[in-house]
Image (cartoon, rainbow, N blue to C red; front, side):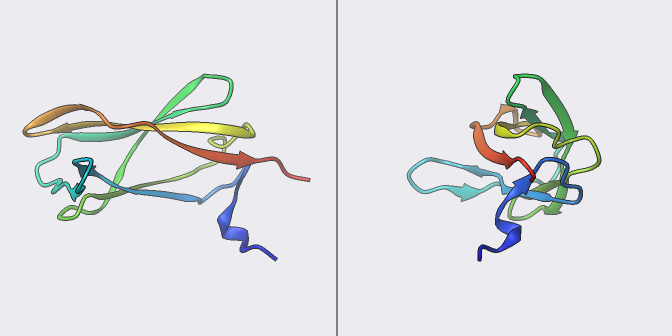
Length: 106
């Protein structure tokens, strides 16, 4: 039986989406987020609508951020996209785009 924590389902509340902000392709290095101005998650739902949520900083020195879902966030099954909007002292821009699946319920 699979670990139930391996899947995200429609309506899940309290699911923590955690990422490490890195720079570089061949040898990625974690970004020190000291002095950040703002970091937001941009989520694109399967129907192409977007929601923006503020990131929580978990570890400034090694660039770990997260967002914990609340009621109404995960309202559609399918492939979701995620991108970060970052404003740091030396850089302002968007991250690469990641994807994750949200599964239907019985």
